[in-house]
Amino acid sequence: MFWTYLKLGFRNIRKQKRRSFLTLIGIVIGIAAVIALVSLGQGFEQSVAEEFQGLGADKIFINPGQGIIQTGGPSTEGLTERDIEVVERVPSVLLAGGMTFETATATYRGDQASIRVIGLSTDESQGMLMEANSFIIDGGRTIRDTDRSSIVAGYRVQETLFDRSVELRSQIEINDLRYTVTGTLERTGDPEYDRGVLLPLDRAQEITGLGDNVQYIIAQIGSGFEPQEAKEEIEDELRQHKNVEEGEEPFTVSTTEDVLNALSNILSVVQAIVLGIASISLLVGGIGIMNTMYTSVSQRTNEIGVMKAIGATDRQILALFVTESAIIGLVGGLIGTSIGYGISIGAGRLITATAALPISVSVSPGLVAGAMGFSMITGVLSGILPARKAAKMEPVDALRYE
Image 1: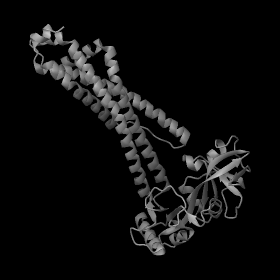
Image 2 (image 1 turned 30 degrees about the horizontal axis):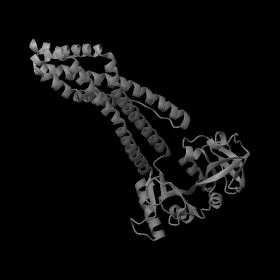
Image 3 (image 1 turned 60 degrees about the vertical axis):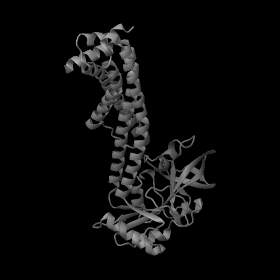
Image 4 (image 1 turned 180 degrees about the vertical axis):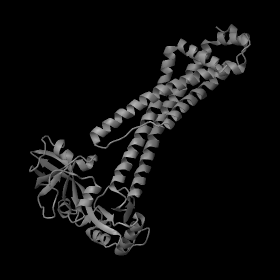
């Protein structure tokens, strides 16, 4: 009996090819959006996790203010160079260095652009800071503590920020002060870092007006110490130094795992919001299926009357129309899954090529099964009311219908 319903369902759908195709569009768009967004989100989350795992679990991040993710900015209650010294005294800390991250106006051969001035400690912690931020020297040399008019240019500063390419020994004015490019960086994949220039920390503080403030402190813990243990020790030392109680700290200390969890939570929220928007297409698709099935019931009233006259039961009529709507949902899910997979693969390759962040996109069997099941359920639910209308028709009234 099941195969009979399928055979009749496909036959009736083929009779209404144009209407069935238009009905599929809403389901296809919704499922394609779900597949593309979820697979891209999973791929991006996996890439971010791999990036942080590459940093190692031995890094501790200290930000001003309450919260793991900070935008930076000068703060009278934030972090200072004195705090770097406090962190360095913690027994579990091997190295500690500070960073600043401010916007400035740069001029190169008459062309102006907004850049990021990134200040780094230039002591023994510099290598650790470079590694933690994926700063890799591509040409020339890195900055030194004796540099007063030298900078290292990010990838976008070299290639796209100005009308002309910036090369080694090029002269750039930053806030009306002239600097020589003594080094260049490889692409980091972070657009803000790529449009930045590296300077010694004290010089960056001077030209951006930060005084002795720093916006980030990164510490590397010694071997044999656990990240959580080091985090608690750093928090205790900074509380004593700043004379604040627990819960009132003007800073946040985070392990690599803490930062990764915070980013994952943000990605999950964004993904949920976008998927909620995409689900509107599925709702529209469901309404389209319902409308198509109601129209089909009206057009096939005589046919329904004939089936009931020769012995078809209400349950069989109901099953036939529900099967048709389920087929429409299932076919829409198949097409939508294929299109969504193609979109996610293309978008992943584009992001990898333009942002230098390798994203491995894969559609899991669970995601495909869930999308297919959801599309079919949408079809079934959308077809129930029209099917009930068809099933409850009286044979005599149906046969007389014109």
